[in-house]
Image 1 (cartoon, helix red, strand yellow):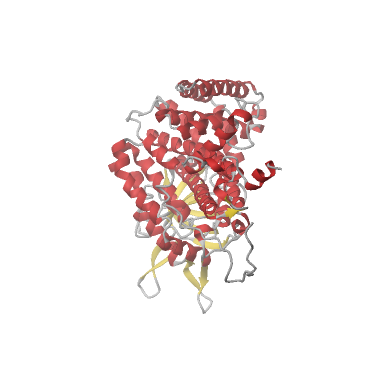
Image 2 (spheres, rainbow, N blue to C red):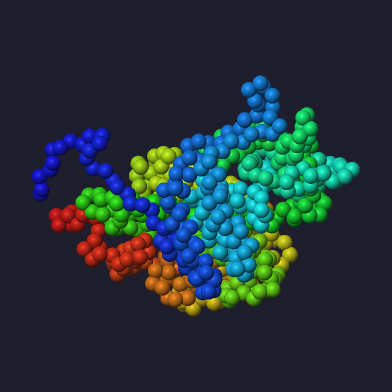
Length: 605
């Protein structure tokens, strides 16, 4: 045994862990590349790939991290009164230059515009959301106002939540009165003055510094309608000159949140806000539904990419750390953890990008589907998409919370440190932000109950089950096909036989999560069968047959279960070898197969 050095460590000397820079977030993400290779034609992928590689490089650049540190360190605040005690013509929301630069950076890379760029044809949504996925974890939550700007030249807020109702928007206490002006007047650079006056109180409003806002309000009928309004308008001041004033919007106070602190979130009081009716009167929920679909998918991409960033940091740490004389990345238990996280993330990203592909099909109904597992007609597509927007957002958000926490724990005490000026390795910041995703755009319970109520209407369950059966029938691998057919039959029997409806609603989480487990298993298998890739096939096998991976605890445990026994004696070394292939994409060095040094030494005793 070598003699130990007797030189004591000091604050500036001794052993320091040195992490290398994070890798390009596109070129290092095999799961994302597989999704784009599946859902984009080769020519379209060739066209978008250089753009994504550039975005992936910039996402982990010193400049972008500096902007993030600025946004995280210097939080937004509001100025309402001048030094003389007079209220400003509109409340001054102050955000940092870093925050603003991150918005410009995202716009430059088309995180909104790609979704409307006909260069990519019917695949523009997939191209757009690939960019969003790369942008989101480096955006300091600027992704939020971007997500509500879909299709417009303006940033937009979405103001729905109130004290009385929360997710139950029928309890809205905001009212709209029809009061047209004698002649049209320009209230801002973008919108003429609206015909409705809106008054009320919005309790949880993000994108407070947006140009316009979509909001729900009740009209004289007592029913909800959707409106759009600019936040500011142009008026003539006392000096006879035009001045910018508030369009009836006052910031009551900012929310002090667990995470997403860079994003200004406020309580807003509306008094006589001039607004335009959007869609038909008294059809507010129907009108705003497409925006909800968009923001749910944006939330899905936000939570999924946050998880991917946490995995990247954790793997970077594992490559840089040595413990008990061995590289951390090759210690079998740590290797198994990294492989398990990758399996779960692969299942989640399959669910996410399939949802996006179906969205593209919905928006381009005249274009034939390229893949056999896509919905086969417009009716089927609408049912499947409605199910997917609730399921994918709800399930992946919960998976990501657990996944990010696993990554935090995997780097030990440093993972618990929250340094706002060092965002590149700050998993605590990611975990704080990840906590909002199961809440935004509908909590898990809200989405699960929405799903069950939808399935119980008309022929929706029959249409969904017919499509799901078709998807499973496409699987060629006998063991995987057999397990998924058995699981699907048990699932549909459970859902159709549970009565009364209240009992099924009580089980709504299990209904949603078990469906996600079955569909993700089918997608993982179909993806793997495209090229018989060894890692992809092993991920599908672990998800479906071995009970590894999966979508968490909220499942019917007798359905989402291991369908094949694992033979430890014959399969141990092969399982560990494939752990390494899944986590790192390389073969396991032979001398490490038996693992931890302390275990090897104890076996000699």
